[in-house]
Image (tube, rainbow, N blue to C red):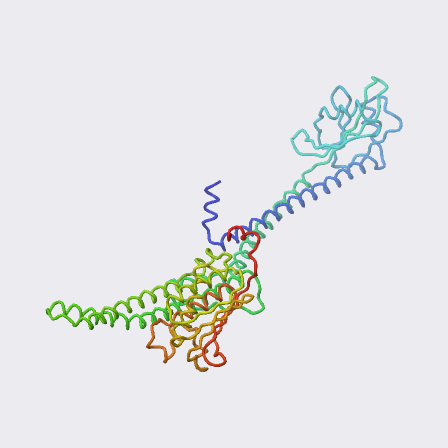
Length: 481
């Protein structure tokens, strides 16, 4: 049984569907055929029984048979046989008395004698029996009464051959068997055709997946009718959506790799040049002047810091959504801003950084949220003039950071959140062009919005809106404490 189940499961889906349809039709046809056969059998036997009853009511008499068997027959008993029917009289004991015109003798059973002992006059019962040649007959045992000569009960057996009835039933069984076989074969063929037609979109989907696995071509799409909403259509739409998302992700990945390679080339080239100068100085025995050596080492250190920052930014951008989702929790935005402010004050000790913060709790990844705020403050510190002021405010989930630097030209504002984009006026300053891109991604994942605009009176104002509440949810309040 288990082997059969394993073999069935190893078959293609269309073959399994065809077999299941054929099996279901076979079961239904078999049930209908068997029911039909038994109904016809019952109707035919009812007709035979009715004929036997009518035979007992036909006009005429067989007094000679009754007199011969009973010597003193009951006066009110009349039995009228047909020409091809069996007629014989029996008593509780003794041999049956057969009508001379009867075609043969019906075998008497104990059930017939029970009728003589227990039945009422003119009461009888039907049964299947055989004659002396073993041919099947339908028998009506009819109780006639008591023979006054020997006080024994007398019954007459009326029987008719079942050869015609059995032949009809056999022919019906053969016809039903043939019709059932044709129906099952037709159902299997129809099931296979329906399975092929229904699974044709699945075949197209399989071909598309195999094509993608073979060629890594994510531009392939499966045509789907707009008004179709069945399971296969939904699966096709899901595949198209997945392929589109993967294609976009692959394109972004390729763009990220290309941009990262371009951005890494400059600091790596500078580092290699500086290190070669230091190496050549050591190899030739002509040391560099102390001031030049110090400037060279400072340049190497700055570029190493820039490389480390760029690699960190690339790692942040390469993390998947699932990795972020596992770390999302209720975070105090006020605490994240205060932590970022401490780092910003260390990077711009000559600046005045003011803060007006109110409590606000959001759902985000703590480290990513703090990094986003740090990136915004770093931009404000970087572009603020020496001795300038940076104003930070957090009010009802809206964080604003305003500097008094040169500001961003209006034509550059649409590009500030693009990866590796840097303003022409800021390309001489340290940075990778990924900071604001990370900010936009982090805020978007937290369900918020971020924007940059020119501030009145000069400078730039960054605005971050995050959904949340002034108090933490009850289930996280204790954890935050």
